[in-house]
Amino acid sequence: MKTLLHFTLACAVSLLAGCGTTTELSAAEPAKPLTGTEWKLAEIDGKTVAASEGLRTPTLQLDSTAKRASGTSGINRFFGSYDSSGAALKFGPLAGTKMGGPPAAMAAESAFLKAMASVTSFSIVSNRLELKAGDKTVLRFQSQ
Image 1 (tube, rainbow, N blue to C red):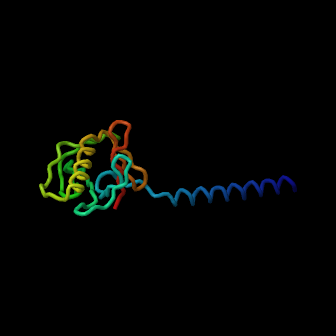
Image 2 (cartoon, rainbow, N blue to C red):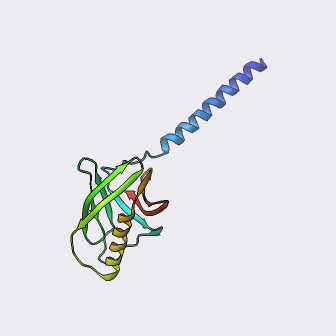
Image 3 (spheres, rainbow, N blue to C red):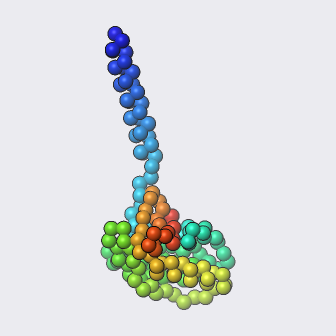
């Protein structure tokens, strides 16, 4: 009788533990794909991107078919090529429109484009994209 009770309790604990794990796994959001997702800039060099007059939040979209990167750089739109293999990511020369804006907005756009040019790899966790130059995260995006 005692053995049957222990067996029943062990089964009940196993079932409850299994239920807890399933709940945790289903609550985790799957990673967004690098391509086909619109990414919105959240940080440059670890600093939160703050809204400023004349500056839109930079965005990034990667088209896997055309191997084309595009988005907004703050004031202007940009486009260019990219190459990725595994976790490696490199942007080709980026071209863009040539509108001007307030000095602070122009400086923020310049910092964004400079960071894009330094990217060598990426990682994605859930809805966050990190672009890295070597081991340093230079840009952090969130999916739209």
